[in-house]
Each structure stands twice: as structure tokens, then as C-alpha cells.
Image (cartoon, rainbow, N blue to C red):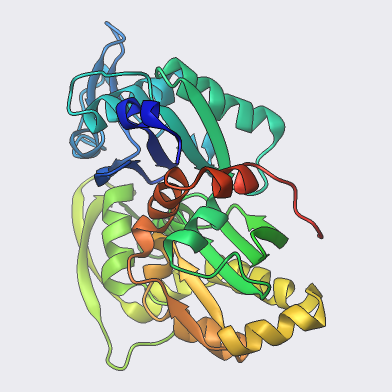
Length: 344
């Protein structure tokens, strides 16, 4: 326990994700779960909307409003916009009334640089944090998924977010092996956009691409054919147009991104020590993060690796729930605050 002062400090755990930001408030659970998007007035430099309201403006805002996704590939691309976004979300987590400056735990991708981690710290302190702890997202995800990370046995976790896929073998509260690829949910959306441009001369926005991914996207064929009408703008004449696309086409569009993730998992299995490999044969692979919800991704990975693959019960919230568990245990937090891998 952190003592009496902790009861007043409104400590927070933050999953500052490329696609979504989640905040866990100590004693209250997840209190913020919104898209990592900010709408800023170019003339006044004031924030017009944040999160869910800002996402509604994507592709629809007038010219004087910039709708910004300030995190790209799991790292901060726009420092000022990220700061304003985090300030907004922290205030919301505090019920709209700022209280004592919180201590904040933030999950960050495994292979971020020192400069990138410092940017995250700077943003959090600018958002009125009194103390900032950085932890690896994949470790927080493993905790949030309920894995026995403290035990002397291996757990293989694949955390697929919006900007990065983090792969880690965890044992005895440490990361024994880790690999990160900056291919995840957003790259899948981009692949769908490019495919429709190439095949149908049709331009769609990221929101439409995301919905196509949810409805038709898969890593392995469905039992029955699926198709849907997709609306966009023709690149040849600039006029609104509707095309019908099936799941096989979307699977083809996603094949490159899925292959990168599959190969990264296979690489992890090929180089880990044999004792840990034995544990993973018994325990299998656990998927977390929003990208793990791609249809039949668990089946594809199981076929490619020959191992059982399971998806966390609430993969979108794994990292945030993990930071919440760290808020409750200072000793665990001290062990897990940004450490180097023991073997790579």
C-alpha cells in the first residue's frame, strides 16, 4: 500500500494507445475509454473536441479544424495535441474537478527509445502528474489478462494494439524475450484503403476502413462467404460510388500485415530457450489488444505455430486493467517499472 496520502491522490493507470486511451482510477476501475483523437481550431488553437466527439469529426470537419491522431505507431507524433488530449482525459477521470495531482502509471511499447519515453513523461507531467511511472504495455497486458507473471514459468503474450504489436515471453516478473513490430490495427485499416484504391479506384476514409475490417476482415476463411456494400468516392470522376466487396478480397488486402505478425510470433518461438519453450507448449499463446479481435486470427496463429491460442476475455482493456493492478501493489510496480529485458 502507498499509505494514507494515496487515498487522496486519485492515482491513475493509463493505456495511452495509438487508437484508444483508457484510464484506470484507483478504487473505481476504468473511467475513461475513448479514441486517441483531438480536434483543434487552427485559428484559435483551442481544442474543439476530444475522444469520441473528435472521432465523429474525422473526414467531416471544415477546413479550419484539424482532426489529429497525435500518436502514431505507438509513439507520440504531436506533443502538444497529446498533452491537451491527456489533460482532457485526466480531468474527465477526476469527475471534471481537478484534485491533488495524481501519480500516473503509463504503459508504453517495448522498443520505444529513451527520447520517446521522455516525451511520454513530459506529456504526463504537463498534464499535472506529480509522479510518472512507465511500464511496458505487454507486461501490463499480461497482468490484465490474469496471467501468472510472477511464477517461474513462461507466458507468451502477443499484444496487438492500434500502432504496434508487442510480443513477449514473461517469467518471474521479467521479460525474457521481446520483439515489437509497428504493424497492427491501423496498418490493417491502411491496407484496406490501399486495396480499394487499387482494385476499385475507390477512396474511403479510415472510419469506413475500420468498419470493413470488423465486418469482413479475417486471418483465416469464414465458414460462409461474407460481403458488404462499401461507399466512397470514385478517384476517376470524384463522384460518390458504392461497390460490393467480399471477405476473400479483404483477407487478400490484409494478408501482408497478418504475415508480419505471424512471422514475428514464429521468430519468438524459434529463439527462446528450450525450457521456456516447453512451458509455452503447455500454456499456449495469449492474445490481447484490440487487434486480436480480427476474425479467426487465433485460428491462423494456432495453425501456423501448432500451439493453442487464446484471446483474453476483454482484450481492449488488458493494458489498463494491468496498470490498475500495479496501482494496488507498490512492490510489484517497483519491479516492473521500465526494466531492460534479461535476454534478447
